[in-house]
Length: 164
Image (cartoon, rainbow, N blue to C red; front, side, top):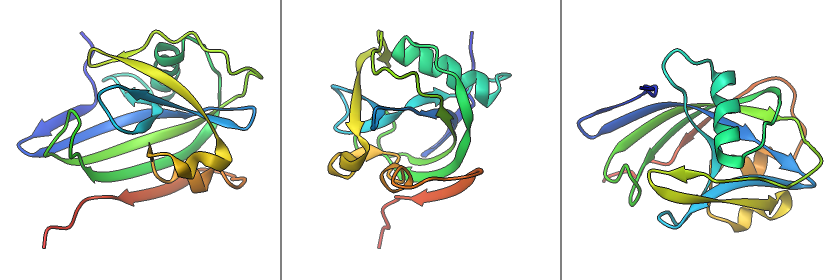
């Protein structure tokens, strides 16, 4: 049995995640499903004993059916949010994600047979310049993809609702 680097403690949920930035022909790849009203990055929880690199390669293959190679670690993302409708509804969520830039293959062809929590996932190639028109997470991606980057960036996103 695989154990994710994730836990729940009362109304708090934490996960350590490996995710991919896949850009082909000016489009970035996101996933979606019929249960959620938003798109999300390719990736998932790192398993106990698994490196972030191993996890992103596994997740990318599971979701796309394609074995992408890693170019480099691009972003370490600390993400704080409250889930209003998804599988973590009502939870105060904290996620640390390692975003890897994947090497382009020169093709947008995928062989996806992916499911998340029993729901079929769909893959979406979104033109980088149009990403702001979509409800897509992580929210930093639309600005990040508009320019060149060197090294590893640390990005913190806090989308928790403030209760007054």
